[in-house]
Length: 95
Length: 486
Picture 1 (cartoon, rainbow over the protein chains, first blue to last red):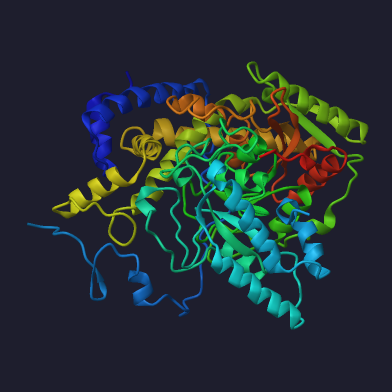
Picture 2: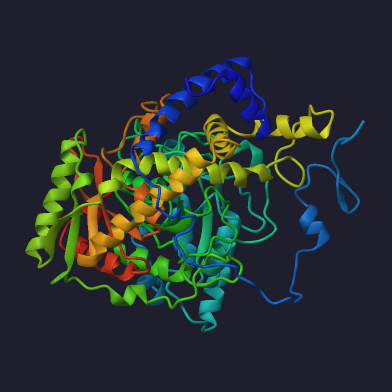
């Protein structure tokens, strides 16, 4: 076993996901078989291999510090689940 | 004459000669949708009156003498992963089921500027995660060649719509094969351009170092026209590359004389469908007769591509999908009493099973203690896969492989076994890891009458060679002219 139901609970919290008990069991089983399959990579010696994070060799794309058009407050808020004036409204953060 | 059955270029010629109006073309396609969409379910949103009104306006502009561009009046559909201003954009997810973008993706903006008319938004696997379009939160799409079978995915709605004549061309996205695999399974043309060729601005992110948008069309000329329209540098996407875009429709030629085509031996694996192998081998023989040189090559790290892909793609996805928290847009659970509960419940209720599975895998692969073993290791093996391709391209102009190991599979066949589903992308995902351009074109039919796709892979930013070989093959074969009976 690569991971237990406890690991699944920990990772679920990191990812801000909530699961039913049944889902946790299924995911533990499925993630185990997928992670075992991933172990195939340990066959390869990659000690001196540089990692590829991106295929294009570009770094630090800068833009000029210029004011350009932006969307209006109303447009920015048009999809808000809850709105309070010019703000997004959310449930209480602290008691 | 059924206008919906014509290619983009054929329709352009009719519009240009003023033999049909833009309105007639749009109405013909809408009628086609009306008569068969119930069976196919290729769309999440269909635009009726709005599209007709846009066509009428174009007709007026044409009668005032305005220039008719290649895409003027052409009804196209867009995968529901691209933001369309004022038009519902769901990514086939419950978590975005009410999202109306306040802006257009660059790809959408460019197509509209060329005169294209958006006829609707295509169904897909939720957040482009899947190979069958069964992971849509709304309904699965069916393959126009056999309604019991999947159209492939994740751009399955796009490929099915084009194959069924419900749209003249579509734009999909490809992170591990999501344009090419459904195009292959639906008997149409689909192209993933080089990473950086097409702007990702306004394209909802899945795995940012792999995602690329591209056309799904009825033939290679249409593909070249669409690719030209959407390509090019965009300052709003810092990974889009500022190099000139060739005039793709103009460079097409029916000759492959002297082209050296590599055939990677690792791509003809045990267990692949016999009809697929025979069709691709026949295609290679034909290309040889036409003057190409066929050479066996090796991409030795092919067998590691799937684990590499599923580590990198899920890691990037877990980070990209963190933004769906119920605060600014999208679904918010009505049951939450505090902020943390709002995050957890909105995400638990809003995401589907495959998306959650991938967020979990990616979060695990990036978590403390496992980063080196999974994510870094996968990035290192990604380097080895890129080097394999570079070596092959030292001697070859392009590579040819099957697009998928089998023709379209049955609905439900792989849905309970994620690993089995992942294996259906085995021939396409290395191309994303290496950032290369590749096309899938029809190359025959199975004994059961299902289309078979062939993949042509090119050097970085050499879409031209890929399109030339594809076009030459297409002009010598009947496959793209055979359409499903519905």
